[in-house]
Amino acid sequence: MEPVRTCVGCRARAPRSALLRVVERDGALVADEDAVLPGRGAWVHDTDACVEAAIRRRAFGRALRVSGTLDTQTIHHNHQRKG
Image (cartoon, rainbow, N blue to C red; front, side, top):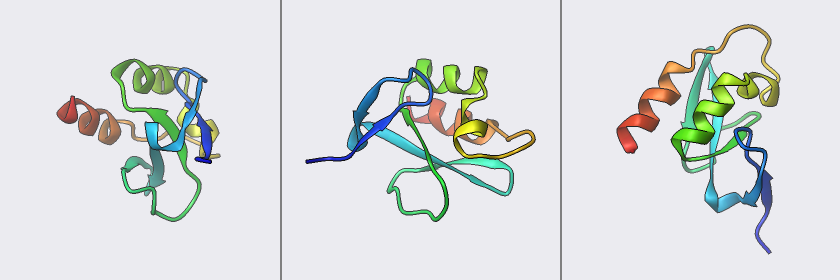
C-alpha cells in the first residue's frame, strides 16, 4: 500500500507518487523530484493551481516549519518551465 500525503495547496489527500516533494535549502524552495533530499518536506500537486495556492497561503513555510520569508521564485520558475 502506497503512502498517502496531503497537498499543501489544495489540502486534498493523494498517493505520494502523485505529489511533488518540496524542501527548503538556504532560504529557497527546491523541488525534490526524487524525494531523497534530507530534512522536512512539503508535498504539493505539480499543478499551477496548487503551487500558487500554497504560495499565496504561505503553506510552504508552515509545513516546513521555517520562520521568516522563503524564496518562492525557484519553485515558481521550475514549475513554469515544466508546464
